[in-house]
Length: 346
Ligand SMILES: [Mg+2]
Image 1 (spheres, rainbow, N blue to C red):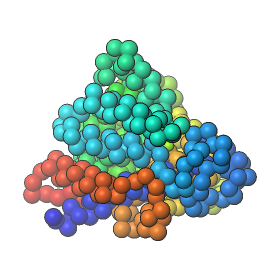
Image 2 (image 1 turned 90 degrees about the vertical axis):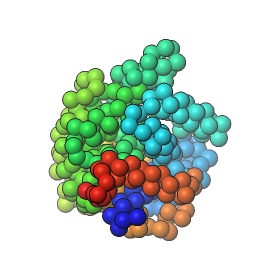
Image 3 (image 1 turned 30 degrees about the vertical axis):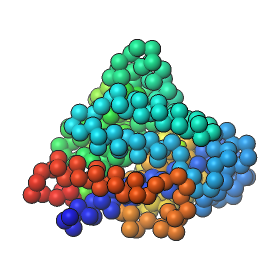
Image 4 (image 1 turned 30 degrees about the horizontal axis):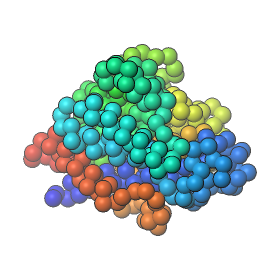
């Protein structure tokens, strides 16, 4: 294996495990307001158990990952198995199997609103390729990391087309595709050796292109809102930045809130994955998804070897050998796309 390929695998693992850190740290605070988080937990800086009556996280052990990480790994596996043509039916069935399995585990954290709606449509006879025509929430962006690992950023048209293809069944809208393209592009730039600032610039370009695809739905422009969200928090102290993100950017499941929020978190954390996870966990709203996106992008730019190993050791529900194998398979697919004679870092 070339040195460039092993570096790319380290960054791929950084994306997947960084995302898991953000997900697990935000698990107990998801859906709560920042005030309620502070009342219950103070400033969250480490894995904690959710309070007893938490609407979706109740009963989970501290450090447990949720749908964000599990669905990203699932999508990664389907991508590897699908080859060049993404298998929509297989993907939708995998999501259905996943929901059945988490229900059996007693989880309350199930499929999100857009994915649920799409799967109901498919069960009513709508083709998998058309079921996602109204999906505009953040589910596609939350699980898109593996596409960024597998796809080189150039040519951008092919990159964003692959993002849109994986979004089609559940999130086939301008806003969701722009959001997923932004996150995937940030990850891809990280895999290629880019830093978090480069990753943010690539994200904006990919979001602009992504917004031209899928069914148009109304909502603030993702590319413009990423630029704006990073501008308003730049140089701010963490507590002030959190206030600006919760009050102005928004932390809800709407793509146009949580995805720009994740980029604002990346900015405040200055690309540090664990800082990104901590900021996200205290931000209120969709904390685990914002954390998974922000720390995943940061992890892609820093690499697994620079993640806090003491925290990784305490993650619950993540099979590290599965992550390692998936990272290697996705990078191998990336190398094959770039072509022999070149390496994964290009
Ligand atoms: Mg979650």
